Length: 556
Image (cartoon, rainbow, N blue to C red; front, side):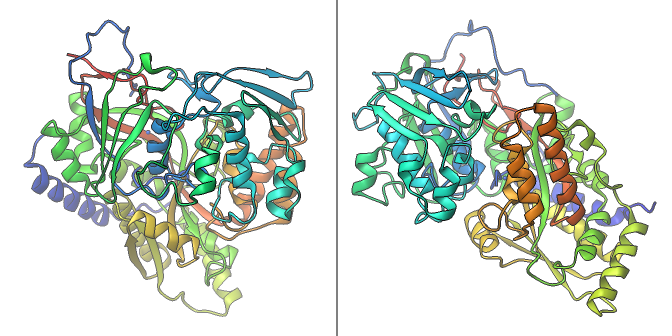
């Protein structure tokens, strides 16, 4: 097995260190994140630390959120804001347990197909309106309306009876199993028992929307105004596009007594070294996942000082192949590119955040066997065989120049440069690089304006279906444009299979099929990597890459 040439990686590291020293004076995401894109954390305490008088914190979310409409958001940047300003029926607490939120309690039928949620009577919108069951019904059915084609997460509602038929085939909304019985009672009927349904209700796709406001103004979520009404622990005080968002404590939130932080300023600083310098100067209280990223050159020193936090994250960083564009319509070409990456070199020499090489789609936290994966890392000999076969099928002697696209980020750039070197050396392919700001990049990927595109997926809940169902049809979060009828059938079977062991076997078969066709090349399984103001307490980073400030506070 041949190893990666050392000099390209060394050059990348030298350049990254030079940028870091220039920006930070030598002192010592993943941004633009993905759903679409985290040592041990010691952030909780016993509650005995005395809160400081000033409860204002400052963080960096790196870029403009693509959408702050719960029904349209699909990325971690938007989610980082929405999870503070909105709240669903249930909320995932700091211990990763589902607990009451807008719903103070719920009942489940014996057949586990009908859920009755009882909303708390003191739940209010930020404009004083009561939060009602009709607001949930309206929000969910709005997503399922075929006219709202940009609601890419609609499939997360498909466990609900009639939801998929309504979205995909235009069936009547009257047949969808979502009904507000009265202001405080929401009844949800599922197609089949779904073990993770309560977890889904904690995600932003399931957040309510104020029906009265949204019907009067379909652009209500575009700016801060009287119409941008929310129901979470924090309100949107201001939103200066491409600059900063300021949140403030919501005095009318039902659990306001728990919320200690008064203000959260969210900057949009794209340069990681600038953010690091601000953190060192006390101008930021958080640096790194899941809000922005720790500069690569800063990681070793933060590790040595004991100030770096690392925990596993259920997510995968990958390169999507546009299979509607040559040469990646050829499966053997795709396999050649996937097998010729040296993932261990990338995580050891570039990311350095204890990420794990990925030769599978589903993270090993869900499928343990995927620690090994479906093929050998850096298998150059096998990659060359696939390349030779693919070239013969295409009637080519050599591949033309191909392009790697990525959203602007130091880490993405370094990885793309390494992949560029690997594919040149191992396959003899010339590769050019192209980067765009996050929101623009998403538009380009969605339009199919790429050949190889960096992307990632962070789990919304801890089940393999959340990684596999992305690719059940073209569009939405499936940028590869790959579809397969047998794959769709397998995923459909998982939704009716009641035996958990049998269901897992079907999920494995679906991943087997997917990895045989390789519409993407996995690179590594994520970790959360961050550092923070030591005075900021009770803020946890979840294995799903979520952060919540509801319970956080600054100690004296």
